Figure 1 (cartoon, one colour):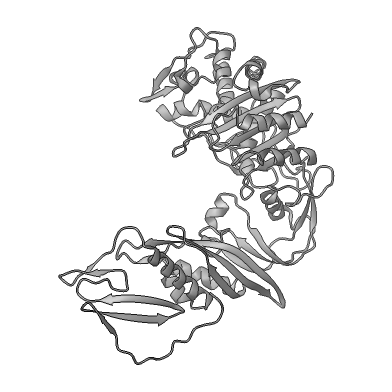
Figure 2: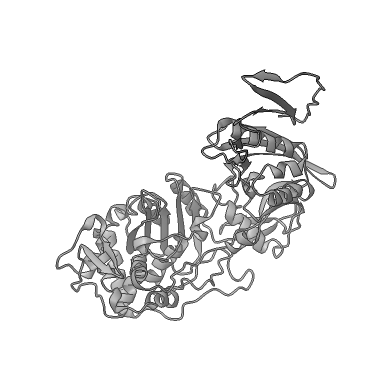
Amino acid sequence: MGNRRRVAERRKTSPAVIGGMIAVVVVGAGAGAYALYGGGAAADDGTRASSDGKPEVRTGPLSATEVTTTARAFLTAWQSGRLPQAAAATDDPAAARALLTGYAKDARVKDVTLTPGARTGDRVPFAVRGTVAYKGTEKPLAYTGALTVVRRASDGKPLVDWHAAVVHPDLRDGDRLVTGEAGTPPVKALDRDGGELTKEKYASIGPILDGLREKYGKKAGGKAGIELRVVRGKAAKAEDLSDKTLLELSEGTPGTVRTTLDPALQAAAEKQVAKKARSSVAVVRVSTGEILAAANASPGFNTAFQGSLAPGSTMKVVTSSLLIEKGLASADKKHPCPKYFTYGHWKFQNDDKFEIKDGTFKASFARSCNTAFISQAPKLKDDDLTRQAQQVFGLGLNNWAIGVPSFDGAVPVQSAAQMGASLIGQGGVRMNPLNMASVSATVKAGTFRQPYLVSPEVDGRKLATASRTMSAGTLSQLRELMAYTAAAGTAAEAMAGVGGDVGAKTGSAEVDGQKKPNGWFTAYRNDLAAAGVVQQGGHGGSTAGPIVAALLKAGG
């Protein structure tokens, strides 16, 4: 497809008669549409006339012709500026027309060329080229997109499945594109040593830079430039997603923001996550809460800070502190670890249905025995774990202020089987690597210190605190459990060769629809604490474990 339009010639020809039916060729918009009319023949709207004259709705999979014809009709209309026709080719004309109109009016994209690629099933990729122009400043725009064709249930007509991502892959429904003076000035982000943090140097730093700009752009003394950016809608903002710059037409004057990131550890973290797809990791300094590194194998989303995933058995660190405080467990005392335990009409089991006969709680913790924890559920109140996570570990209160958007973990009050599942990091419990690094740091330090990326002295913000600390006896036993797990439990292989004062816990979280669980690992060494996750990776000891251990070693 190019920018030139075809003008159909007027022809005086008679329709051809084929087997008692009339074939008519309709030419327009640079594409041919072929239709056959006659008794029981398919009409050009995708329906079929039945013997009683009523339209028969077409069902079943879309044909290759339906997909390519629908896609080309939409792209041709969009490219030529016939936006009502383009919107009508989708299953949500109102939303499509609004966003396509905004593409020209608000995003100021002109001279658009859309080139479709090879169809794959119901999906058609396409290349976009255009020019963004604003007050005498122009810059070329190029990216790739994709659309999917679906069949409308009411009449079987093939239409483009409308989502904002059809216009640009970085858009979510409710977002829009805007070109103009940047909402916030740019920032020059520095590491703790004064070196500049860039996406070229650190592959997964993009979301952090976006967050720093949003929060500190105006405070840091910079001047805004002109840019094409994604302005997030309400749904995306509720997820703490920042507005995103797509194209910079003119540079502003950046302000400067210093972070706590350690350049050597950040480089090491980037290298480690590059080895494992869907991996994320975070490292904090135990004594201060400073975030020293954070990296994600998928750079488009900061899972290390904003992920919301079931943490699996790494949550047993928090649960163990609760059980010890309540006198329901003690490191060296015998503790049940049966093959199965039923609670709330759910039958829970251990990995490979193992059991530990006449074993201690320390043995159950080190081997990650699920039933050892769930067997204590009948003796707990529904809100006990929630209160422990909030009051001792500072989790789930939605009050962390680290300097960029983050998710502070969630441990909701649950009952029956869901409460039992939450004791082993399933149910409604949700965490990310930063949360779980903070859990290990709390055990090592003896008190919760909220992690932070930008010093609170920069803007006077207040860091979150915990309302109480563990007793000395509970803390001592918890450290003993994690140290034993690092030396002789499920974390031993990964932690081999990691010297100093160490402790660790592995985890595997089952997720509906995944063949493999998410693998988790949290650990501390001296004044460092780290945690990582490999989604769909399998057991934490062999997936996330090596990533975390390597960074603990690198941190000295």
